[in-house]
Length: 141
Picture (cartoon, rainbow, N blue to C red):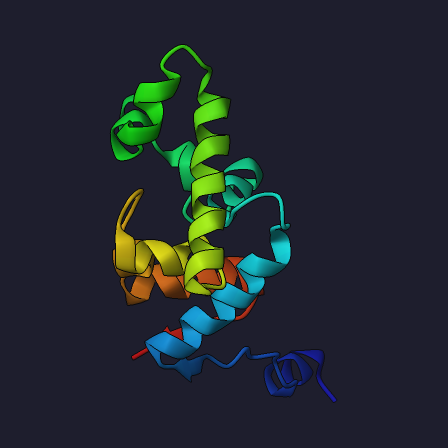
């Protein structure tokens, strides 16, 4: 048999694209994000430190972080950014516990203190995050 023919007829590995609803994709991402975080740090702190997902607190400039969490920043004016991030993280952890939310993205979706939570991501962004964090391509719709 000709080698050229073998290369043409050999099956290729094709990765199928799974179709998910928005809630299904968010549920998977929530589970993955919860698994990379620990009980002492909210997801915003963890993804910022790891440089994944949305970037968490690290994606905000100092001015943006101070504005979003002004009610914390005003009382801790002279402290470094890391302190404000840690206090904002504690706020998120407390809100998660109070509301029963799995991660701070769930809290922010409803409360909008630091961001818009899951609402800030369109389907394409969720598809990119799924590929990056879970390793498989999906189509959300």
